[in-house]
Structures are given as structure tokens and as C-alpha cells.
Image 1: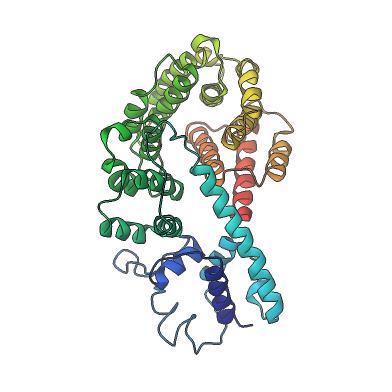
Image 2 (image 1 turned 180 degrees about the horizontal axis):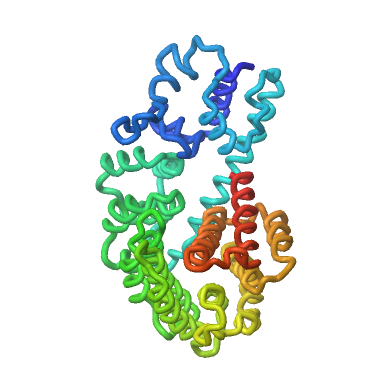
Length: 421
């Protein structure tokens, strides 16, 4: 089976699994490469970029044309497809038809399972407090299924053509858009069209704020203000969660500036220590979420400003006080809660410079691969990258064993995500 025939067989198997990619072949292209390379690059912005709009499918020509029977030499494309479906590079050699079909069926089944797992995780927001009927026609259910498979351009076109969606349908679409990272569209075309009562629901507001504070949007101050306005002291756990997330957006805003100097760094670290400690100590709950964020800030202060009494907090004590909340969340029925507790505990062990940290991280990922939220794991990787970047920008102590372990952890996580995607 030649490469082009393999590609056609891949397309046909996706169709059998009812995986939608919209109305044209650019959608199919985006699906099988998962955005790693663009379909039609803007020549003005990237004159040396490849344009796949003709070569991928062009009537009877192109890789998906009816008259082609050839190998594909574009290594970028083949690498991207392999990563999407976890293919070994051997699939691009001329295996016999039966072997190729067996590989395609096995890998697409795995792809479908992973995709549905991530959708289930992100659509688990508790919107039960909203008095909205959840009764949809078969046609509406089919629409939701198609939306899950759409790329950003098709999503935008869908909203353009469907400007009067019901409130209950919008509530179903919002978590899908959140899971796909289409944050601006989620806010502008879905959340902003909700009635005031629904828009002010705390779960909707949290999705809104987390989207604003994402790396894609980078509106950290807006995210802080929104999160800081939510919750009350009556529900202490929710209060801690919201306030910690709010402070973390200020951290991203203040410490990501290219003009940040050593004096401003120390000033901002001390402000963050103050706020994280205040949340961490609230009613002596010692919740691990503000605890691990506090530990990161203290660790940076201790590495960059060695022997400075302003950063004399004991990370081991912070961890010990947090163990109770970690244990409690590990036993929670929610897979997300279990993940956050386990990964935070591992982050504590990193910052404590435990010798067995990397082995424990690898074991956790291997033993829980089906339960792990890859999007959230990627955020952990970005947190570690931020930690390493700050330390390396402001100290010559780049061979700190904690920093070296953090770099190794980034490698482990990235390899895991690449394998699982």
C-alpha cells in the first residue's frame, strides 16, 4: 500500500467512525495533523511556508485524488499525522494492505477513545444548578456531535449561520469550545449570548476567567478581576480555589514582562508570598492548591536570592500541612480532583529536591495514562517551564538540582503527551 492509498484508507476509517471534519478537505487536513502545520499558509506572513491547498486534494490529482498511487515525501506532513494517531514511522513504508488496515483500525480506535475521554473530562462542569431543560432532538444531538469535530474556522462559520441558538444548546456548546481551546469564540459567540442569570453562574464565570487567563488570550488582569469577584467565605474550599486562581493570574501578568529586573522580581515574589500565605492559612485549611503555588514562589526566592531572610519559609512544612488536603482529593470520585492532587504532590516532591522524584513522576504517568487530563498535564509542563525560565533569567545557579529535575520532568511530560496524543 502506497502512502497515498494509506491516506485514503485512513480517511475512510475516520468516516466509518463518524468523525466529522466539516464541509471541505481543509477540515480533514486540520483533523489529521491536529493544527501542527497549517493547510494554507499566508504567503505574506510566511513566504517560505508550504501551501497544501492544492497538493492535498485537487480533483483527480493530489494525495487524495482518484488517480494517485504514490509515496508522500513531505516529512512535516507525515510526522504530524504520525503524532496525531500515534503511528510508528514504519506505516510510511510499503507494508501489505492487511497490515496497514490493522494498524489504521487499531490507532483510530485509540484516537477515538482519547478524544472522547478528553471531551468527557471537560464537559463535566457542574451546571446542574441551572434551571435549563436538557431535552434535545436527534437533529440537535447530531449537531453537537458534528461541533465536537469542527475546526475553528468551521465553528466560526457555524455561529455565523446559527445566530439564534437556544440557551440550553449554548450551555452544551460552551464546554466543547473550552475543551478545544477556542476561547475567544466561546466568550464572544456563546457566553456573551447567555441571559444574565446564566452568564453569572459561577461555573460559566470560571470557564470565562480561565479562558481569559490562558496563554492564548493572556488577559491576566481581566481574569484576576473576574475570579476575585466570585465566591464568598461561606464556601471556604471554593473561596480558596477562586482566590488562588486569581492570584496566579497576577503572577503570570507581573512575572512574564520582558522588562522585569531583579529588584522588581523580588518585590513581586514577596507580594505573591504574602497573598498565597494568606489564602493557604485561611481558617487553617492548608489547602494544597495555594500551598504548592506558595512553594514555587518560595523556591524561586531561595534559589535566586540565596540566604535572603525574606524567603525563609520551610517548603517541607508547607507540604506536611498540605498532605491532609492532598489525601482527601486523591480519594475524590472526580478524576480531575485526583489528578490535581497527585500532580501537586509530585510538584512538592520536586521542590523538596527528592532523589526519587523523576521515577515517581514516570510511574504515576504510566500507571494512570487512561485517567490523565492531557490538557491539564500540559499546563503543568508550562508551569515547570515558567519556573525554569525565571530561575535561569536571574541567577547563574542554573545547575541547581531542583532546576535540573524540573527540566527532566518537562521532558518526561512532553514525551508522555506526544505518545498519548
